[in-house]
Length: 335
Image (cartoon, rainbow, N blue to C red):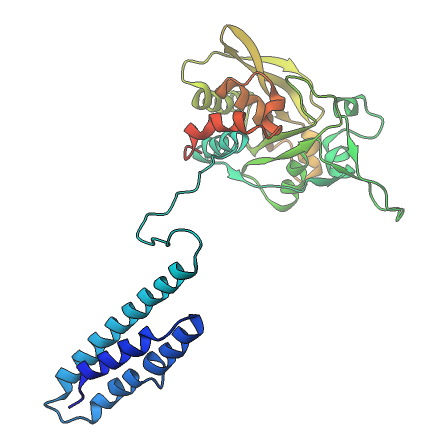
């Protein structure tokens, strides 16, 4: 029978002589490697008499565990010996790194998306660099139209190829057209995304903003459906007792157009623009405007975030001031 006690004593003596990482690796190969001495014992168990196999097999496996622990302990001894500082105590718990929180705009956007998803809307995204055709022309804002003055546009430099002009989208409304090109009614979709406008910044305006556009197309839709949808949204976001009002407004791609405001801390504040999709846009999509109607709306996520979190200056969101962002740690996990 194999003398496992003698084998263990020899292995420990050899391990004690290993004085560096190379020596430990050589010892590991000699004893625990594929052709190591203990590995050979384990492989030879099958050749032993039947009455010896259980004892030798169990003892050899125990010895393997013992030697693996011994070589780990020896490795730590060597590390401590060459270290200028105190020995590494691997039994101490690690230091948990500080955890950040989602950006307040991300928190607000996810909350808004979830609200619309609960109402049966799909969520899609479109390109940040857009064609003039989709951003303006097919939304009833041709070149020279006064409505273009509403958007201070950042144009992409012309490469001289004579191709269509490109720009950083000024709103997410172009996805109305792109989506209508690919889908048939009924349509119920929101389009979140970043928009860009070359304008001076102040406490309530930024050159970059996050917008959520909504589009609903179906048979027999009316302004009442628009009101019901948007009032349900603002009550979910701002509370069930929020007061709302609709006032006439102008957007080239809807008729009639309106703005939705809420009474917030005693003042009326505009939250979003909306209206019934213009029949010409429905017709240009290949649909019968006598059969299909729809409504659209668009809102800035930053404006909703300012109201929800009591932020008075929109510029705080993108200044990367850690002191400001840390105030939102309490909302981690609520998106």
